[in-house]
Image 1 (tube, rainbow, N blue to C red):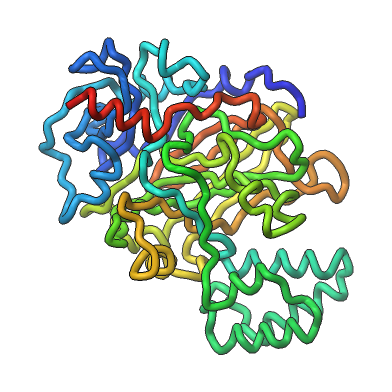
Image 2: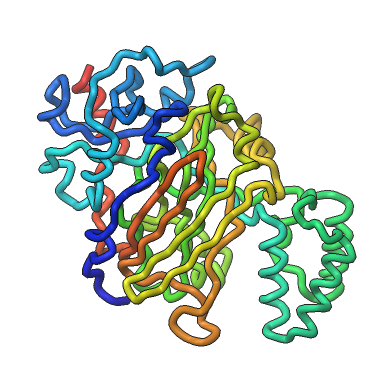
Length: 404
């Protein structure tokens, strides 16, 4: 990987971070407020809301407290201090997570909206993309064999793969036929079987957000972003809202062994969420999630550019069913959770050489956008070069005690 000279950072102008600058919808997030701007003179993270382009504090000490609030969450008349304009805070947040910013930063900057909520993720939730990846993997470049495998799939499930129901009788038949053809895999099991893949993506307080650097291991030579919708879920399993996320993934590590999933998924800066959570209200309903499209753009300092979209209507498991498999009688999350819903699109075209596929370069700008949720932008660096994660739950507790 080459060293980033930050050209893509200094030339970038942030637009569309929130639809109409937050004038429509109910938006909540977190910002770091320095002592000079804090009403009590104590620097630390605050839970905020956006109103008409202005960012104001709320009465909630943590995002977990807000998401777990019983009943409706009404922030329109909630008292709070003005901490700045949205545009100003966004500008402040370019690479704001440098190692010393919590001590020396004198500007309000964005933080990931999730604090002590658990961060979980679902994989292999789009049957169409999953099956096509299986075709590519098992056919190994043999077009005739690819056609045979694709034919088995379409003959069994039909042409409209978006209507496939995991765990249905049809998918059981397909499983048996693919086993007989020698093309079954563990990914197909969670893709079309009854049980979803759900894993821990990141520890509480470890996520990054808009303007921050995301990290990939220097030893990884095949990695990619995964643009996703992320649900904010209460400790009772109620979906309270949604935001955008990047489930940064090391494909070479996961490909070597499924037991390396932790290495592939949970590294310094490998989880980006935000910048704000849009709560459900009269302008945004749960049904809107499956109607939206999620766009991914990657711009590299080597001139590389790609653009793709996730069509959430093609998700194979409903958001509510994924939540039900994550939290309930068999597993509780008393602080609530953030749940990545999975991705249909990840770049696969060759970048560095024939048949080598896509992999990140240091300095890549990764933009994930959806009209209802805004835009999440990050820059790629190696995990040892980006700021260390040093502000954890114990620091948050100390701040809350001092702020009483």
